[in-house]
Image (tube, rainbow, N blue to C red; front, side):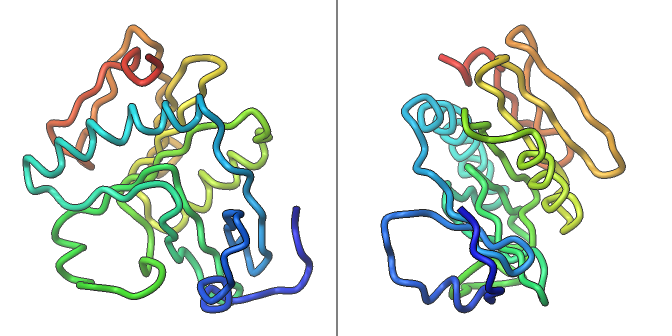
Length: 182
């Protein structure tokens, strides 16, 4: 569901909790359905090993679903990935913040939901990359694939026989793709 009145990130932050999640896309409020069972399990299977590795190696901070990132202003864009990572240097530079993180994470992960359209997923990927995200991980439960999107149109598709690698974004982190879907 989409409203037509443009709102700001500050107005989104001040909204009363009505039981729904929202993103703000070029000033338009987008209502998000709650995640289903499979979506939540897959997101956790990706996020938990990432968080454990990042903490053990003091690389930065991993954020859970529903954490808002303010990607653009006037009109405002606030996206909330299923998981995100920001490297330590950036966390220390920004310090403690109130509200949405000011900018893009280094890594944003999205788990495709049954109701997501191809266009919606592509819009999210474009917003993340345009705002400076260095790696967008898109997990597709229906095909059991993981697509890795890097700046400048570099895309890799992984199958359950492959290993997800954090590359330069999360150095040293790996995860067998099949483990995401168990």
